[in-house]
Image (tube, rainbow, N blue to C red):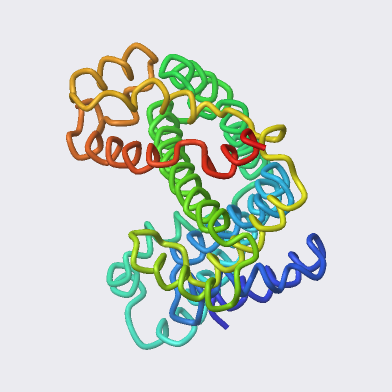
Length: 319
């Protein structure tokens, strides 16, 4: 059985134990976006876990999602190690008697291979787990961290765990960039759905089908099943919650408010540099025009309905 298949079997049981009956729907939802099979690689499994973390966060909270998926990542590494060790053992058993062992090791580059498969002692494994826990905690408390905080945190981690500070900082920046783009995507999708529900407070099946087909033409990665699920979620939310009282202004919202009126590249760069978050548009150490264009496009799109339901909020205020 492949690592991906073993992981999927373990993941299904683990989520059932932790999430109950909804776990099957969560697994099926992610499988529809990232199907795992015997041909799937370790990168495929890790991408699956990342998508899973986002979905679990919506259902049971970000902290619970981080905890569950951290365990799944560790289990995946364990399964992969066992699988690779078994493969090497079988290869050695089948071929070692037929060829010179030195030729065999040179052919498969086993010196480095065995080095990568060395047993991980308990101290090293614990250190890796603690490091990732500290990183997850930092990112949960700092949505858009300033660069000086990133540098300070990376240095602290390097001294505490004897790791490369630059690598830690680079990984942190990539995660913040991903969360930044993902947040905009969620807000724009939410805004479109709320506008739809304002026009059709009690949508028929035909209304929903038309909207889902329309939305599939837009440049988003959401599947039709996800859009249908979110429509129902937003419909129930708007029905039973007061959006004015429950609305929260996030760091993303405040950033958008500051730069959405600018279209000149230098003005946007200046604002981001003043806020110490210019890393959002940088590639390594240089300002990347591509990243800047993507940022402006995201904010322009979001500005069409910056509060994610402006029409509904306007209706509430009018009444």
